[in-house]
Image 1 (tube, rainbow, N blue to C red):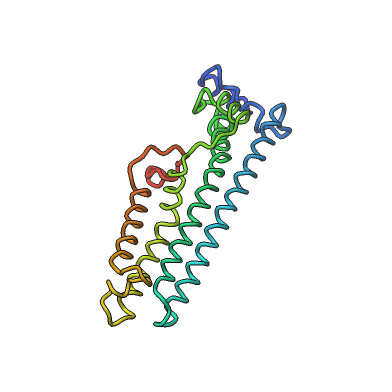
Image 2: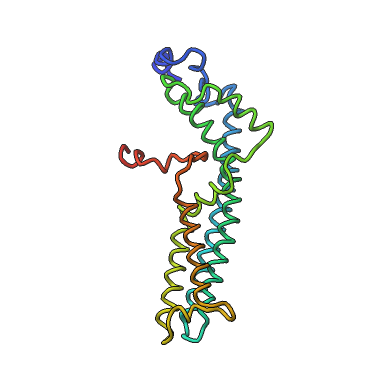
Length: 234
C-alpha cells in the first residue's frame, strides 16, 4: 500500500484496518495464502456455476424438441406438452439442488470480497462483518448448506423456469383449443382421465408454482443483483 492509503487507514476501525495489508503487494507478502484460498474458492464457484448452466441448457433443448414435435402434426397428442412440463420440473429440482451447492462457494467468495479485498483496496472502510473470520472458519470446519430446497427452487423459478413453464402452458392451451373441433374441455382428456380433471390438475400445478416463486420470504442466499438500487445508482 502507498503511504497515502496507509494514512487513510487510520480512519478505519483499529482492530480491522490492517486486514487487507499486503494483499495487493507485488510479492503478495505473508498474505499469499489468502490469495490462493480466494482463487480456489472462485474456481469452485465457477465449476458449480457451469453445472447450473448445463442443466438449464438441457432443459431448453428438451423444451424446444417437445414443442417442435407437438406442433408438427395435428394428430400428435397434446399431452406430450404436459410430459415436457414434467420433464422441466425434474430439471428444476436437479438445478435447485445444484444451486444449493453453488451457494456454499459463492457465500465464501462474497465473505472474502466484502471483508478482505474491499478493505485491502480501501482501508478507510470497515469490514462488512466483524465476525467474518469466525464465520468462515466454522464453515470450513463443518460446511453446511445455507438455503432451503424451497428457496433454491424459488430462485431458479424466478430466473429461468417460470418463463419456460409459462411458455409450455401457453403451448398446451393452444394445442387443445386450436387443433380439434371438439370442446377444449373434452380435448384436454388423457385416456380414461377426464378433461376437467386434467385441466384442474394443470391449474393447481401452475398456481402452486407461482406461489413458491412469488410468496414473500426472507432470502438467505446472497442476492445483491436482486437489489433495485444496483441498477439505479450504478
